[in-house]
Image 1 (cartoon, rainbow, N blue to C red):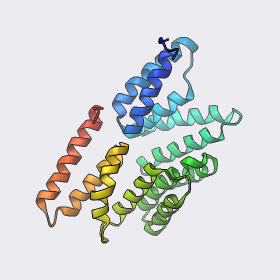
Image 2 (image 1 turned 135 degrees about the vertical axis):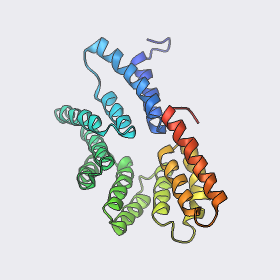
Image 3 (image 1 turned 60 degrees about the vertical axis):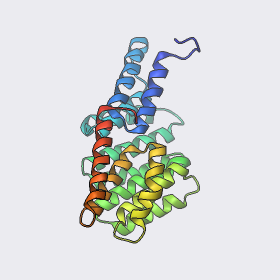
Image 4 (image 1 turned 90 degrees about the vertical axis):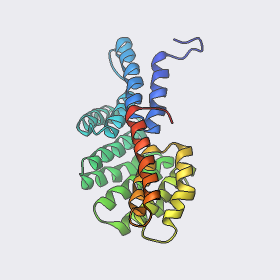
Length: 239
């Protein structure tokens, strides 16, 4: 217990939560596992919130089978509780993301549909964002773009998810006028500000491919940015 009255378990969890949002999976796991150890010592069980965020980082690290196991256990536990539909929806969203990382996009889309019905309104555009990614993987470009537009238009969409959705749209339409300019001049600076590191990496890699045939120097610049960022994410370094 700290002088301010916060439990060490809670502090470690909150730090891990923030690092998860920033995409620093390895560093996030260090803090979440510390929180988990304290919880197990005190209560002989781990809070589902901790298990959920550990699973998110497992997905980032490619440990999708382990992530699905944790998420399925959380789902069984949460379904037995009252007034937990919002968290159940969030779990379904991450189950969908795990399936997407494994290439099972049909299963991912099914999970996102459940999440859409259960998640609280402010997270609705995020489900549409993930849905668009799986639709693109199924070669459903028109449906993916409709999902993105629906997310952008949603009244619950905050500045962060709007720039994420706009960036995703540009990644899918790099062959069209102004998409690359939007990524370079508006999306990337804001993605850096919001610390959307995974999407930022996608933008760097896409711009590398975009400039490679016509501008080797600019392509090399984005390749370097992608390498530096991927190394920071791998090591869990702060930007």
